[in-house]
Length: 150
Image (cartoon, rainbow, N blue to C red; front, top):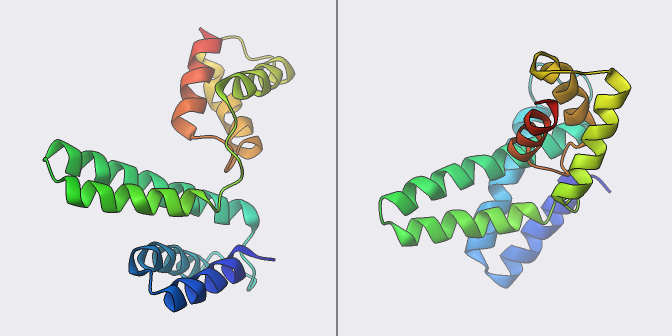
């Protein structure tokens, strides 16, 4: 079942439960998916799973950044809303890998590509991004790559 169908079903359930906070988060996900689906780059009606996962990660990143700003400004009410939306959106991502699992995958990529220094970071990051889409935060991946290549 595609992510769009799952989101639509969960929107219906949230409407029936009158859970307006969850409904708001789900509608934001649906809107982002519809923008991609109707965009110029999409040749077919189906959005690839990789693009869906990247979209979810982007939405989570946006909300975490907004939550950080609200937290710095002392707006706990808005911070809580953003973090609640993060928790809802994260449920649609695959299980996140631990740092040790990420390290082992990146070490394997480094050995396959023959990367020796930081100048090879782009090559390693590209392959790691494809393998770890939706399974790990890109900030963590980049930090581990940098650590391993130094």
